[in-house]
Length: 169
Image (cartoon, rainbow, N blue to C red; front, side, top):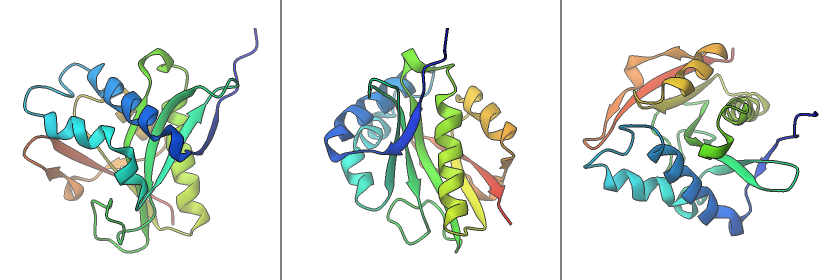
C-alpha cells in the first residue's frame, strides 16, 4: 500500500477556524498540556486569525485536502507573534497535529517547512518554544538538530515555554 502524500502549504483564511480547532484538540490530547488554569492559552491557540495578521500559517494536508496539522511561522523579531528579540532569526509557534494524524510524520514535515522558510530568507537560526508535556515533539526537534536554549525560556504564568534553537549558519 502506498503511503498517502502530505503537502505543506500556506493556509487559506477560510481554514483558520479549522486550524484553530485542530490546535486546541492536539494540545488537549496531551495529558497536562491544557490543565486547569490554562484557559487563556486555549483561547490563544484557537485564534489563528489574529496570528495570521503578523505571521504565516502553514498547514499540512493530505491528498483529499484534509488538514492534518498546522503551525505558525514567524519570520522575524519585528512580528507581533515573535517571542524573541534577536535580529535575523525565524521561528515557529503552536505546531499542532490532529490527534488522528499523529504518528504519520506531519509534525516533522511542518517543522521542516519552517526551517526551509528560514533558510530561504537567510535567517541565522530557527527558534521555537514548547512545553514539557510535548515529549514527542521534543524528539522530533532534537532529531532535526535543535538544541535546548534555556535563555529563550518564558514563564507566562499560565504556561512555561521551553526554548530551542537550530543554528542555520
